[in-house]
Image (cartoon, rainbow, N blue to C red):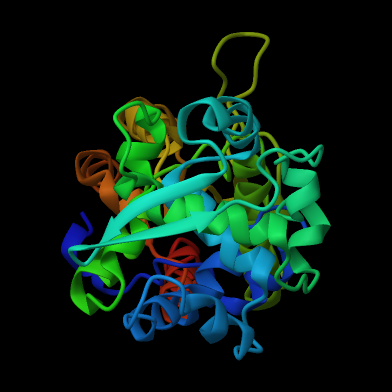
Length: 335
């Protein structure tokens, strides 16, 4: 049984650069992870007044205005639908001006687009799909949303929407290095509805393909694909579904389950729930089962991972050295 703490200490936690490149069109998460340290540094050095962040960002080449905004949207869990609702509600609550408190002083910001015909939509903000990889400069629209997400929680108003008062609090962390870094890192482990959903499956498939490709290179005489496992099925008509099946030249089989989740979700819980029954079924038919587990989100589910480690014949992370351990395990089955 693999020790969970040892597994975690040998994990990558966040997507390796080669996979982040492949998946940039599938999800914004890798781009956000890649630039989160730059994002944190901008907020850390912008602590002289609540407006200086604009100049700091303007002088930063590696973080565009729309990507900076996307960080704020994910961290506050406020997407385009809520922003369009705020645009309708806020004029009757605060007018065109956000009055807010920062560092025990009061400030005012006049919105430039809150009463215009411009929608506060993801499309107009260039924060979705391929647009997120396009370098968009600061605009009145982006500036308005950034100021709302940064300081809306400090608004001097009794009627401010709860989503704003509770979630738009990032500006209060300007210059507070430890608190800010902890807040950002922890939030990226949590599943945001802005970046979660359907893309999770696509990202999981990329991880499966990467493991499959690695094993094919290291084990050229093995068959690595989605073949059926001999004698193993859920029932008489349905084959057991696993991510990868490794078949040795001597017809030894090993099922391999793969999960790499940067943000936490229920996939790892499902795999854990199946782990004992699957190992029992596979062992009864002379087969083995292995798991490749990684990602900060997965390591948030400690109980699920302990179960998987308990009912796995080999458990490794996504590191090259760890995948080599899987290769060695598979080779040992031939002996």
